[in-house]
Amino acid sequence: WQRPFLLHDAVRLGHPSSSWPGEGPLVELFNLHAAARTGPELEAVSAGFERLGLILHAAEAAAQAARRHRRDGLTRACRAAETRAWTLSRRCQGARTPALLDLDVPELTPRQREIALLAAQGLTNKQIAARLVVSVRTVANTLYTVYEKTGVNDRSELSDLLAR
Image (cartoon, rainbow, N blue to C red; front, side):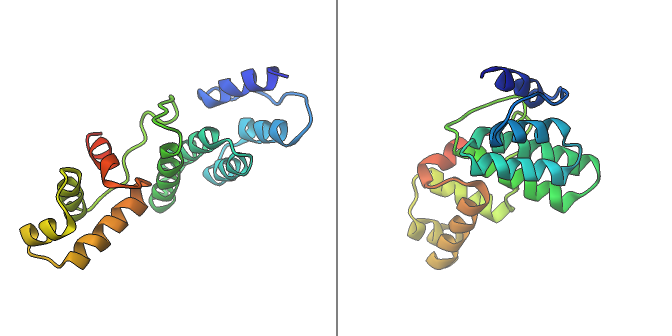
C-alpha cells in the first residue's frame, strides 16, 4: 500500500514518473499529478488533494502550478496559484518542502507592509493610526487585507511572516 506514496514522492520532488497501478481516489489523483503538464491541470490536482484532506500535497501542487504559469507568462494565474499555495502551506505548521522553498510571501503594498510591521511590534490599531495619521478603521481594514493575502490569523504570526 506504500508503493503509490513512494512513487508520488518522486512527483513531489519534480520527477514525474509514469502512472502506477491501483484503485481508489488517492491513486487516481497521484496518477493525475504525475501526468499534469499545465498550470490548470496542477490546480485541479491541488483542489483534489485539498478535498481529500491532504493539505501539504495540495500546497505543493499549487506551488507547481504557479511555476508553470510563471513559465508560460501568465502573471495573474501565477499570482493566484502562489496565493493558494501560500495559504495552504500556512495550514501545515511551518512545513518546508522542495516544492514550497521558492514560494514567495504574497506581495504586500508598502502601506500594508508598514502597518503589518507595526502590528507585529505589538502596537494597537489606535497607536498605529496615530503614528501614521490615518483612521483606526483604515488600520483595521488594512490588517484584514494582510491577513487575507497571507493566510496569517493574528498579529503574533506577522513577525514570522515578515521575517521571510
